[in-house]
Length: 506
Image (cartoon, rainbow, N blue to C red; front, side):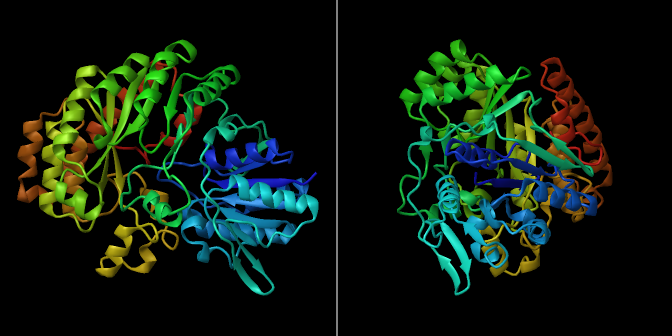
């Protein structure tokens, strides 16, 4: 039997690699998964020598015909070294796929034997069938293939429109193993997680300048509808299977880029979810897509938490730098609605933008102080991903160098989510500290506003940072206690996030 070994770095819950395995197994192929090191927020460590040797030993024993590696831009250097180590012990065909190979295949094809540009389920299945049947692979759609005469860049195929044709990613029954802390462990590394992640759609209806979706839209232009949805029944069947197989399951998270579905879909989902699933669930939402009727129906069905992207409090910064439409009025309207309905909310922000002015940062504080408390914050440090609109603009303006673009740089290894201990200019630390305080209901908003006007503290922000750090520890302790009480504080979650060095801003 043709064997396809799938490897993913830093992604125990990687939906893409699990979906590829499930698709291959459905097609009659052996498709084990190796998870190469766990994701640790702001603390990504490259494999050590003993872990590379474990990788080589595992591959020698597995003896695959094809090795597929799926990854994002930050791991380009690590995957390149992994591929070199794999070639020392295996003659397997090595194919790369994922976000970075899709956006920048030219970075990848000189190292991998082939590169998948776009959705990988059908191309990888075609590749496996060709190996099984002894057929040529040179014309496989979606693949760039390196051969003796150079690189063949095959046409992309139409986007998959019927998502219900795909198997369930996180319920793949493949053989699994993981390498972490110098040890090889067999089994599913996330099987005891209390949270089940699911996609009810693929693609996004929006195109923000910092997000890969804007680039994907260009690559797949003319190849079919980009934002596609599964049927309600298909979603329920997967969640019912998850409940049967995962006894520690306590919560569902819809990982769709934004939870946007037709009214009839929402009505059918809200009507049947309490009876068929009955677990609390979370969604991601763009303020532009918010609708009171929909949110009230989802609340009745079991919605308990919404993650909302607002990125900045300055409408000029959002529109000019992040290419997002929408207004502060929409954000405030959604915030008040969520508070009225009784749904917990986390707001996504992006700091460390070199184009942001002092006025932009002050506007962010003003907006956050108008939001009903309590709320949580996920604050991200702007990361320069290749070929994104905002990265290209920063390069053109000379505000960053090519060496600061992710892939060459690895900023996200230590500053994906913003932490106050990361070195940055005094004024940036000052505003980041004040912004983090806005989510702490025990700190008066008037005090934050007053401090924001202090020129002395802007230049000497250490006291503000210390106060923000202390307040954040209190908030994190409250979050952990709440998760513990609900049975959601698993060892898996603690390993991902809990570290004094890597403490998040909530």
